[in-house]
Image 1 (cartoon, helix red, strand yellow):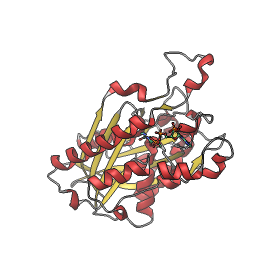
Image 2 (cartoon, helix red, strand yellow; image 1 turned 45 degrees about the vertical axis):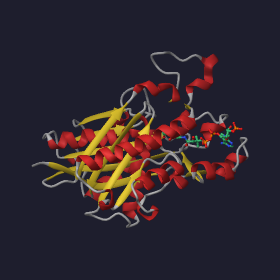
Image 3 (spheres, protein in one colour; image 1 turned 120 degrees about the vertical axis):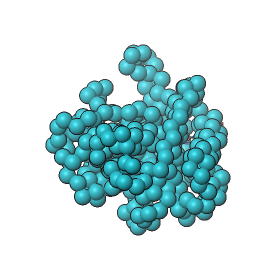
Image 4 (cartoon, rainbow, N blue to C red; image 1 turned 60 degrees about the vertical axis):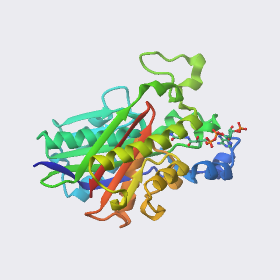
Length: 322
Ligand code: UT7
């Protein structure tokens, strides 16, 4: 049987750090409110001359290094992003050019904060059906470009960054199962209302940025993460206590804690980066994962659960042995 496994991980965070105290100076908020309601302390913000592909490229190079591969070994590049460099070509094609390779497939996917687990689902199926041996899956975002810095209800929540993995063909799993879902009826609760085909209306400038009904999204996220965890474990006949690590999407510390509690996971077994990175959407899981692999917490052979929830709504999970 053919399976896929994660051969290498990488990540990149822009140099500029914006703390809650920095935000206190430019909007009506407080470090205390932000930490209490979200767990966030600081976020990284891309420089004016940095685009999503810059962040993605740096993360991809680290993942290739760890996997011991050259860029030419890559058969497919998938980038999950809500903040592509341009309308087209896809950011994956820009990264392909900058990796100095030609010919392999390269495309972007848009599944908001669930984009990375959607990407893993596609990449795993691609490898298992003989489409290629090495797939680069990247989550990369410059959400600061979609942030309305005059809206305190969203501006304090997001950050920029990128995370990447190389998924590689192998004869034992690796990726055990992937699960992706969506329910489009919740469009109004979390969105950027303006867009290409609907046109941009400069008299409604605030609608070119993220808008969220935080409270409604929060409640839905907690319930959905619980159901996707149960679906994933039941499908594989795995007891929640067998999990070594839980790597959730990093949107809010209270959501992470609630999801961990349902899984009966002690917080020492949960990878948390929301305090340092804020919500980096599609980049948050691969970023958190790379941090914990590189600091030695997550080790080869351990059983991991990734879980994501985002605009759409979209949600999904990955169960894997690292
Ligand atoms: O990644 C995709 C999925 N996204 C998420 O999962 C995010 C889900 N939602 C959340 O994380 C939380 O709902 C938020 C952190 C966004 C908000 O926390 P909350 O506990 O749901 O607060 P709230 O929206 O109910 O607002 C409570 C109060 C309001 O004041 P009033 O109306 O009670 O007087 C807000 O105006 O807090 C106020 N508020 C703020 N105060 C200081 C909202 N934003 C701020 C702020 N600083 N930045």
